[in-house]
Length: 526
Image (cartoon, rainbow, N blue to C red):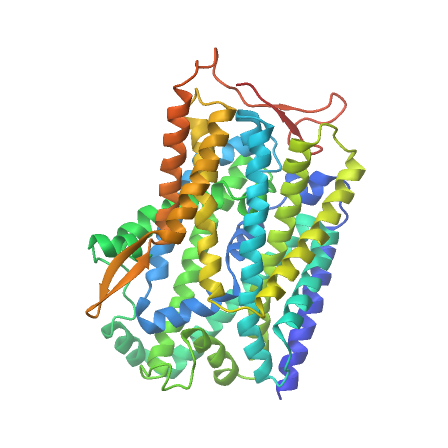
C-alpha cells in the first residue's frame, strides 16, 4: 500500500512544476521575472511570504516542541512578528513601492550611494547562500527518514539534488510568478495537512483529551518568567517574544530581499501593506495549528516520552504520526506537503538571490547597464548558478558533523542588525553620508560576529549552570543600536548636507517610469 503514497508524491512533484509554469506565463523583461511587473494579487503574495519563511523543520519541529513543553510558545513569538510587520508595512514598504524598486537595497543606493547598495546585496546573497544551504541539508534529514519508511533508501545528496533540480525548473523558467503561485499551493497543502491531522486526532482523543492537555499546561501561551538571564536567552520569554520578535521581524521582513521581493510584486502600496500584515496573521494561525497538533499528540500518546515512543527526537513525532496514524494516500499527501515546504523556501531564495545579483550588484559595480534582453538572460543564468552553489554547499554538510539546524538559526544574527540598522540610519540620522553608513555596517557585522560566537550568559537549570547564547531575537536590536551609534557618531565629524537627501530614481528617457518598466538604477546625493 505504500506504493500509493509514493505515486501521490511523484505526481505532486511533477504537478507543482507544471502548474507553476502554466500560471507564470512567459517573462519578457527582467522586472517581470523578478517582481511580476508588480501585478500579483496581494493574497497570493501573502501566502508566498508565509511559505518562504516556513521550512521543513518548522513544519515538524513546532508539533514536537509543543509536545515537549513549549506549549503555544511559537504563537507568542508570532504575536511579536505581527507587530514588526505592521511597522514594516507603515515605514519601509512605502519607500520601496513609491520608488519603483525591484530590490530593497535600491533604497540604500538612493540614500547613501551605490557602494553601500552593493555591500548590502553581497552581504545578503552570501548570508542567504549559507542559511539556505544549511536549511536545504537540514530539510533532507526528515525527508530521508520518511522515504526510508516507504522503502526508498537513498542518500542525503540524492535528495538535495532532486529537490534542487525540480525546484529550479519552474524557478528558472517562470520567475517570481511561478515562485509565488507554487508557494501559495504548497502552503495550502502543508497547512491543510495540519488541519486534517487535528481533525483525526480530535476524533481519537475527544473532549477529554483536550481537557487533559489543558490541565497539563500543553496550551500555555505566555512565558512569564522575568528573570534577566531567562529573558536574554529564552526565545519564549514574554519580552523576548514580543519586543525582540517585533524588531527581528522588522529586519527579516523589511531589510531581507528574500521577503521584500514578494511585497514588491504586489499591484499597489496598499496591496503590499495588506500582504505584509496578513502574512503575520497567517503565520500566527499556522503556528497555532501546528502547536495544536503537538498538544493533541500529547493526549493521543498519553504523555509518553519520546524514548517510550521509540523516537530519537522531538522532530520525529509528527512524521511518525503521518506515517502510522493516517490512512494511505492521505499520508502521501502530507509527505508531499513537507516536500512542498522545502521547495517553497528554496525557490524563493534562488529567485531573490538572482534578483539581488542583477538589480544591486551588477548596477553597483558595473558602470554600463546591459540591455533588457541581457538582463533577463543574466537573471536566469544567475538562478542556475546560485542553485548549483547551494546544492554543492548543502551536499558538503552531508558528510559533516554538528548541529546544522542551530547553525542555520544563528547565521541571521551576523547581518540582520547591520541591514536593518542601515535602513534606519538613512531614515533617522539625516546628516549621515555614505562613508558613515559603510563604516557603521562593517563595524556592526564585526561586533555581531563576536557576540554570536563568544558571548554566553550563565543560566541555571535543574541545579546546573550552563553557558547559554543570547536569544536570536535580541541579536537584531543589538546590531541596530551598534549601527546607529557608530553611524551617528561619525556623522558628527563632518558638515551636514546643505539640504536633506531626497531619494531619486533615474530611468532612461525612452523607458517607462518607476514601477512600469525595466530594472531601475539609482542616483544619490550626500
